Amino acid sequence: MNEKISTRVIFFIAGLVTATWAVVVPFAKINTGVNDALLGTLLLCLGFGAMIAMPVTGTLTSRYGCRKVISVAVAIILLSMPFLTFVTSPVLLGLTLLVFGVGVGVTDCAMNVQAIIVEKTSNTPLMSGFHGMFSVGGIAGAGAMTGLMSLGFSVVTSTLIIALAVLALLAVSIKTLLPYANPVEGPAFAIPRGTVLTLGLICFIIFMAEGTVLDWSALYLVESRNIPDTLGGLGFAAFATSMTIGRLTGDAIVGKYGALKVVMAGTLIATLGFLIVINSYTLTVVLVGYLLIGIGCANIVPVMFSQIGKQKSMPQMVAVPAVTTLGYIGVLAGPAIIGYIAHHSSIAHGFIFVTALVVLAALLSFSIRTLLKEHATA
Image (cartoon, rainbow, N blue to C red; front, side, top):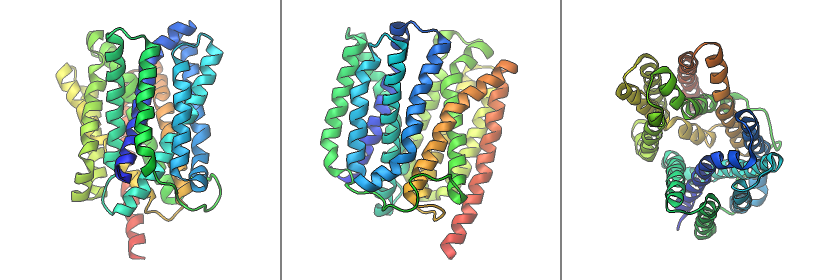
């Protein structure tokens, strides 16, 4: 196994454990007896744990190397995962989610540090494929958990089987994870500035768009388009499928057409997708809209992470956590903002707000082109 494959394996693991938790959520709610409002508060513990951990990951990888940091982070995930399936105290669930979030946050950040280094040394686009493996891991996690439980395994046993699979994947890939990272430069954490701020804002917008589809697509289909609730999940399924395909083919597309064209085309396609979703009433047409959103968003974030390795505004060890944290804020804040807009108006108006932000991402992408062009000729 080489460095490229081990990087793909870690992205796959991250997607796998995230999807496993998504399947466990209803069981955690039943075990603790919490209502929807308290469950929402508990879910924030995961995000809070991740956001605590992300800013310091750059320093950790610089000091100890990607291999050690990723290994410890995955170990934290594996130790906390089983507890998510059987704790009955809301307080204990919140604490477990906090620990789980720390593991997920460090893993997400450290694997992108490794991915940027591997891509730079190979001199060929790889980032879309790496992120594509996260999507594949998500599909595999949801499918495996559902399949295991349909065979009669309990949620606890099913989660332990997934944990053992993750441990095996880590064991076979650990030797080719990078024993180093970027050298220590500057402070452990800094407010993003210059090109890094622009990269972070674009990731914030695209992650917000993804989070909006994840949390609101089913409700939108059922409540706004009168689709049977049994079919509500089709919107996200269409989005996730097209995004996965888009990312797995993205490296070749970026290599052929260049990063700027891919991002500009992506924002245009995603905008068109949202407009179709907002203005259509037939399920088939709305699903086409979700497919277009997935295709459009697929390679924008991977391209942004690739640019972190090329920009000179901030040291890479600081830039990766800064961009990752901004993106994660988009995942957490996006659905909440849409909920606020939906409460005072409608979900469709929330989608219009996100569509406007995607257009803003296109404009920000154009400014990055200018900055990188100036650097290249300097």
